[in-house]
Length: 250
Image 1: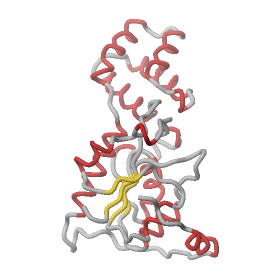
Image 2: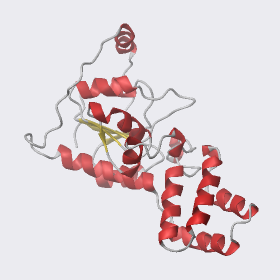
Image 3: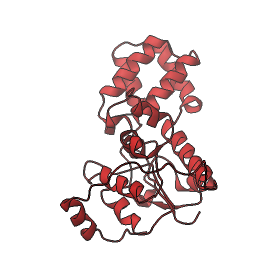
């Protein structure tokens, strides 16, 4: 799809993404990337993954700038879900269960979606497990009667207390055993996990790509993107950012 760009990293392999949406796939978004991309006059922008901590995160204002310029901006799964939850009143289009949980206040902490991952050369392979995925998987295990609700709640608390870089099912289960959670339940969960594990972030990313394909394929009219209804303030700092913005490496 000409002029469609998606910022993607560890959440979804690029070879899977292209099956859902024909687009130009870029590395995880960082501060200034959306601003630079606006110079390409894209038909739409999708944000799944984004950098944080060691690299400045994407500004809210550059997303607002894109929306104000009439560029549809979608978000899901990770950084995209966080920014969409904050900016959906201004027209950013959020997709998926993670976006909805942040929008509705059921989730609040950024570390819910954070993972440590490998370098670009290895496809940004995730090296830890996102808390949102652990929550969904534990919930499914209770539904499937693999875990008692109380055991799942204790495991969820153990995972939440771990630094995001150290989160994983193996570590969670070892710590659960250390505090005396029922060994037979932990063993049953370990056996169930290979087929029962649910990747909520990946599921939401695919849903966003499908949503982009559907919306961008619609004719103008009743289904057109919503009208921009906010004033974009061009501050001195913003004008400086515009001047300093270098072209985005494709």
